[in-house]
Structures are given as C-alpha cells and as structure tokens.
Image (cartoon, rainbow, N blue to C red):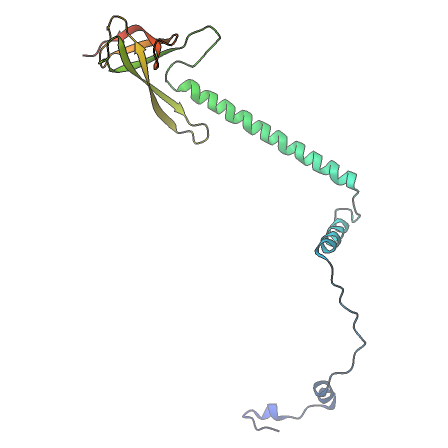
Length: 188
C-alpha cells in the first residue's frame, strides 16, 4: 500500500469491496440499440404525447380537428374585435384632424381643394401648394405632406401668398387640370 498522511485512509478494504473494484462481473448480453429514422422518432413522440393527454387516452383525428377548429374560431373572433377597435380609433382620429376637405369623389362631381399660391409668374397660370396633414395608420403620428398643382387663372387674379379654392376640370395643358374658383384671402 502507498503511504498517505491520513491513517484512516490506510485501512484495508473488505473482501466484498476488493471483488467490486477488481473486475466487473460479466452481464447478460445487452439488446442492440435500435436506430430510428427521424420521421419514425417524431411519430412515436406524438403517440407518447397523445397518451399523456387529459384522460390518458389517445384522441382521434376528428377530435383533434374539432379542437383546432374551436381554437381558430376563438382566435378569429379576437382578431375581428381588434380590427374593429383599430378602425374605430382611426375614424375618431380622422374626424379630429383638421386638414383639407375629405376626398369625396362621385362620378361627375369635381374635386375641390384649398391651398396657397406659391408662384404666379406664368401668364394665366398659378402654382398652388396643397398642404395635407393626416394620421399614419400604424404609428398614429401626424404626417404632413404637400402637393403642387398648376391652376388656370384666366384673369391673373391671384398672387403669391393668397389662399385660394381650386376645382378640378378638363385638361387645359400638359400639367394644368385645375381651375381657380375664388380667392379666399389676399396676402398682405
């Protein structure tokens, strides 16, 4: 035996301990490990899961299908109410926002817009900037944009800075599709 510092560790082992540490006893031949294909492994896992289902018995395909359909109905109802809430919120935001008149366009009815004249250099033509403020559908932020229209001004009545009302009309040139209706406010 090797020398150690602790005298208690130097005690001899019992004969049973000697036999256990000496050589392992021969065991019965082990069964060969069965290697399963991934598909077979998934099927067995599903079967085991079904056996652990409430009630301890496997459910039929019809029962599982009925359960899935019921769950989908519940989720669809939740989605529907969420969408209705979002639409109502968007409508409320739309009404509270003061912007250009709503773009209602029925067949035969001409659109009208209100804007500010930014240029009157061309003869019988003015450039009008239409400012649009609307709420973003998803992010709820107010997004401001503007559009420039070329407008026919027969009498050269409007000047830079004037607030005017314009109405849609037939094409008068390559870019002019609007006509001056009235000058609401003159620039100072």
